[in-house]
Length: 456
Image 1 (spheres, helix red, strand yellow):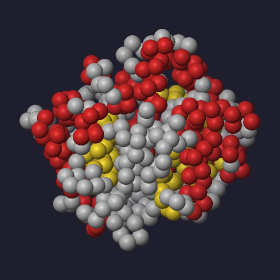
Image 2 (cartoon, rainbow, N blue to C red):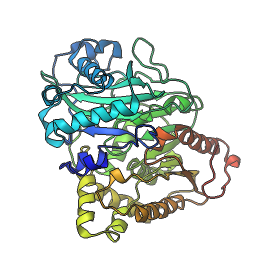
Image 3 (cartoon, rainbow, N blue to C red):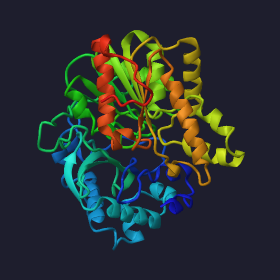
């Protein structure tokens, strides 16, 4: 699989194309293919009016049947179940938008579809994890290997409604109970809520469970809330939990926003969302990857509203500076291009600067903090030739530094996970969140264990 990665010309697609291990193990994170357009528009025509209510509230997944969006989901599942053996480049061109194919040629898409089929086996379409809109949905499928997958997908607004973006995210349930589909049900633990007006734009969010403090989930770069699907029901069993889609994320249901965007703008959006949706603090903020930068800046900006933090294999503001000293200028430039040309339009340099400045000017107040770090190398996320042994040492040092942000911060190592710990060890993510929530409720429960000690 890695040989395919090195031949892809588009750096964004190459970096995120394969986030899975060999077919039998499936022990790291997700397989991802996507079009690298800076913005995915939501809505905009009347081709599928049944999918949107008059107040722009997404409707139930049962309305997908027979629609262009539903047809593309069904086609994708069918070709996976057929092993991709009979797919032709003409078939791919008929179902994927030209902008997608400019980043990933049809022959390589066929190869990746065949890899998915070999890795996961036949897929059963269960429905959707949340209500769809005209142009996007997060399909929920059960794979033959025994767990569920979320498939965020976006299509063109106009006919022929070809696929413009698609992810495959393993979302094994943290509590062992299958994730409920909203199709033909009340949505189970996935609250069906309208888009929240924050002024000039609207943001999509789910809000479920009861109790204080409220857990807020912040996803990684280009991700909608979909990768959190497997942990939300387990968190909702012991407290209130809110997830949301940042603008411009893959298959996100929120209104798009102008790019480039910075961490400060993400924080302003989230604060406006919580205010408009009447979600009172205190909050336990949970950030994955670059989402860790965002929740840290939120905590620095609104310290009185944040009671705890869980950082899930999160980015560090000094990672680029440190990496530059470790590799050749050419290799570093290749890595930078792959990350900084992201489809969400996040200006990472500006984000690093903002978090660095906030750390110096407004150190985080004392609060329960768990830094949950993946231990498995993921060479597919770096250019060919990247020194993974040196990268692993740097990752360890930076994750330890994050744990030192507040006195008594804990570092927990997810030994069987790479970057997407919530997809490979979801129970460990939930137990980390539970430990921080309980510490907020009763500070006497918080004690600093030895480095790396599991929280469960």
